[in-house]
Image 1 (cartoon, rainbow, N blue to C red):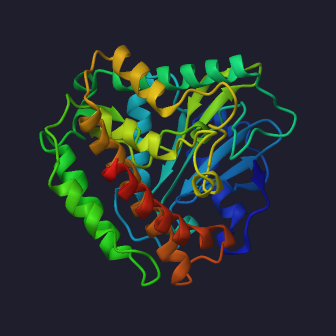
Image 2: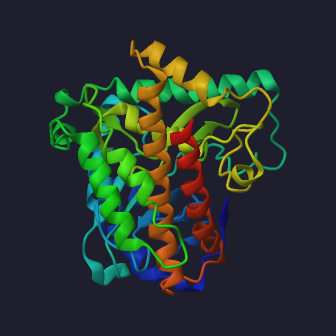
Length: 354
């Protein structure tokens, strides 16, 4: 899924390669002789991700996007340190190799990690990959069992993770922070979503017991075992991870989950092959998750988390579209993010109205 580096995202490869060799662990640096081939992962829409390919080893480099509005999502040190702290208690994160906070090297902070070998799906299955309905169901079950496993991590036993917990009021903080972010990034060609914002503010629930949450859990952020594509071997893209109400994480995941029977507008915006025959429905996923974690929810209670998940996705899309709208990136993929916000406005109001 990696492509040639876009010209606007290119960097000084010899300088970066020399820095990585100098700062990587000795056994890794020994495999990094010469200048690597560089490829860019095209699937992401926020932080920029590259594959550095040497004959003996491949590493992955992450850096913030050009024209980013700031915030923790683009904080490379936070993303690096979180994964380094999580690795001993959750075996689906890549190994961190080095963190660079000297912006003279690449023009921004960045970090480098080992590449987890395996299959990453995109909007559709990669060429040559097939999943029968029973296998698609098994993949779906295994994927959300990994989410349960993540939410069961005892963050109090890992000080670096426990420090991310800001205490009660997570749901309230999230609602108001995303309202602020959406308004700051809004462009004149998208709806204002004020109706949804008001509805959310009036219905903020008390937090469920806090856990580590990924905050961008999707099939296309998972690495699948190349010998068994129903088994998850890695979880990627931890830029939004934090400690908070796990049902906010589940609601965010369901905002991306497009079923085969969903309307055409939602099919056009699909980012993962969740519409394959055999995949669980959103309702089945929520039921399975709540049973695994002994959570009881009414339909009305779940609606808040589902609406928030869609509103938050609108905020993420709008922050990306803001960069495209103002010329900070020319990637044509991002032109569709404005219409995505328009659709998510409709989707939120549909969920609210039942």
